[in-house]
Length: 557
Image (cartoon, rainbow, N blue to C red; front, top):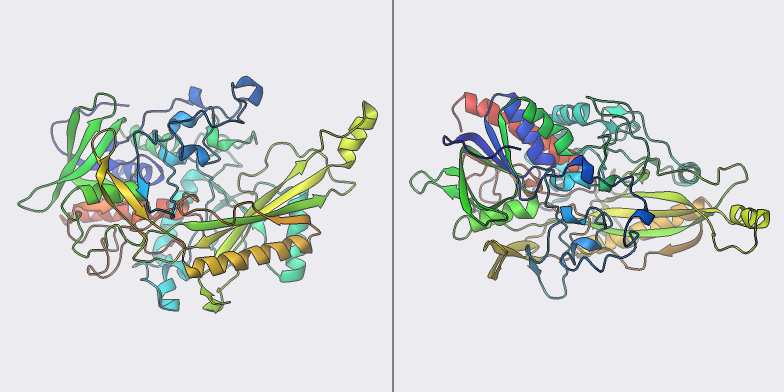
């Protein structure tokens, strides 16, 4: 890491070092730009990774999170654990609020690499079923780009980061450039066969940004399991070990950690962005970084928070839609057990794939509406061997009972698309600031009728699919469905579009009102689709970067 000492403006300043910020940094520096990257968190040294730490080596054995008192929201996430919790935002220092009775779970990582350090690694392309959904069903607006425009940028990302998976030739979920897939467990293969036989629905392996072959000096996955604690072999994608490293190799990037950005600075005479203002995280010293181009990539809500804090009524908000159309994925699952066959191994080892299996969207692919709802959902899940270690007996008798009682525990859950609604929004909280005096967000977000109809349909379909494979003790989850935000797939609030009256950004994710200001993360999305969003976020960041480079050559920025 370097310290920002440059007196002349950078060619670009990028706020955020995660999946999208890393890609913009790589693409621009390789094109010859001098770039500054600002990250609110600290650097994470590989010595801090804990994927090989065993429960007995920790104080709380990964069982108790109640002691994380200053992270009451972050600790609700499965990936926030005893050995990595310091990566996550301190909720006391970084507060936010939400509407009474409408909880919004905002999971944030404060470390170099952002949420790419601990993400689920699901990597799925979108199709024109997603990009042009509004033209199909009349709700919301289309993306101002098509799958054909995005395809080469998907390929750029996939060749560099590595995505394992199986080609299925399904129009609703286009195939990627794949490394060999990670294997399924026996129980998953039984489910795959049964569901195809009865429903003619494909179950495929979860497409994942985890290497099965070495790539660019990174080793193949060795199946140790808890990827969200870091990866010393660099087998999964995170920006510090891939895109940021590539940017650093050019000698044209300066990375500043512990930089709490407060707002975009603007020349009042020209209306152009001049850089960003920020506070040093620990000393709270105010600073400013100047640049010819400003790129926001700090995650959906943080980027929108910066825009809302940068001018009265929000910077680049002549349309009045800044902060609106917040979306996430509604999640809900069903589980059960499958008896093991005599010839199946009783111990399957560590998780074979971090994403295990998925059922691609099958609702409203060939039609517009099913059971009173539009759009769709996909289903993912996994099975694990489960043993009754409390079985009676001793010695050989005990071992036999444990073996005979073994079964597969199976659970499938839906990722349900949330429709863009104007009333789902964020705004500046006028009475609350964070530890650096920066105004915080107040969130208004709730599931609508369409999402709840899809949720009910998905639960019924999952139950039927599980039953087809002989799954027993089928039960829905203890909580009916997730709260908004908890999928950690939030998008929207500064959407791109073809009309400056109804969008914040143009098709290149450049602000209509501030022509040297770009938003490279999920804030720019007009719809959320039902796939995990990160691969499309990265491909879009590559697309934006290519445009910026060409526009700069033409003097259009």
